[in-house]
Image (cartoon, rainbow, N blue to C red):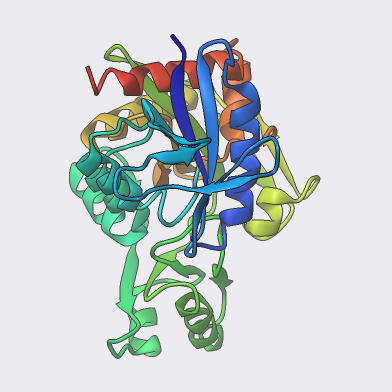
Length: 331
């Protein structure tokens, strides 16, 4: 008997458009012989399903059911395809946990922790398995002194919203006088801002997931941007960045990235597909942690789909594995 799967897309943040693109790829790749897929577009104003006939129906948020054609569709599992709020920050995870509906991503606490880059940095630093760049964490409703911040940190620095993704609101600051404007730009996206020292090196990232208790670490990717850093344009505009999978780095570095990512996956209690980003500082040989993405991009050319194909798997096989693993949580 086919399972009813809700594929949630959209969201409340500036990443909603990217979420819709990812969800379209996921929907196309899900095995229609195994799953009835209902794509639910989530916005602040509505949670809506649109049928093939163009008719719409609103989700009943009391039990996350779908009134459709005089009956009620309930879901065996939810494939969370939302980047940013509320699909990557623990909000939907907590909602589905209260309803007892399995879902494909990390749990509520892990999602909330990793979504806040500053708090995640502190936890990762305490684990003492990888270097973490020196940083400062400031809040919109609390005074800060830009000059004092630069006495703590060495220029250049990155200024970014503590919660958010796709490098929205992010700036690279090379001169002291640029810092206040960069902070204000980040505060337009979030009430918390992370300021961290720039690490010169090569950006390496890998996806990983666990099925039947067995962790699979995908081939790593090197991201080479023609911009100063891997910003929104570099991530989503063809030709602005070069992504090499598998990364052309020494085997020892590949192994170190994959091993470190695996340790962090377990220590942070991750679930489903996660992508962890690093900077390899060639000059010193040090590996630095960048961030954890608990809902990495799934458009055709996104990093994780590249890595899945490089591992010899199809996206249909991969997404099916994520769903089947989530269903075990209900058993």
